Image 1 (cartoon, helix red, strand yellow):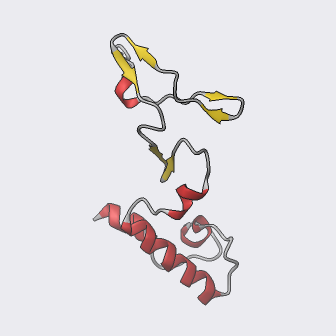
Image 2 (tube, rainbow, N blue to C red; image 1 turned 90 degrees about the vertical axis):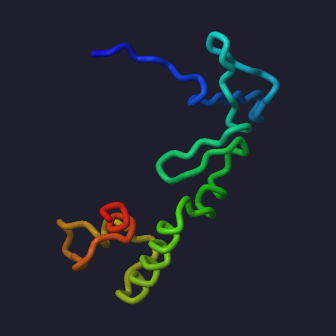
Image 3 (cartoon, rainbow, N blue to C red; image 1 turned 180 degrees about the vertical axis):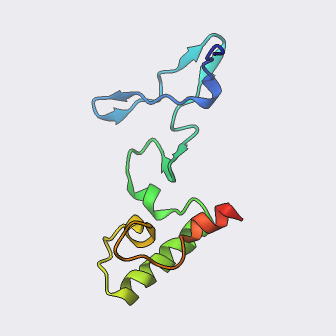
Length: 113
């Protein structure tokens, strides 16, 4: 096993003081300053995390064009099949489900190609 290293440039800091984001505190590792979430937002698992701490911006902006297309296709499929809009995509495209569609998700097909 190799030695694990901590990369300050790929990390983010977030300081909350009395429930509000405080940008005046800076963290460093050696000579490298760790950027705050205000300076460089974080993308993780298809969501964008910013310093405003709200979930609405993460769900309003599709990370890629293909994910935006897939949302529209899934919405149409749910409506066409008479399924509730809250039904997850896993229920639509899972292989072990009672409802088994003859195709996979658009994002999965895009990643395969």
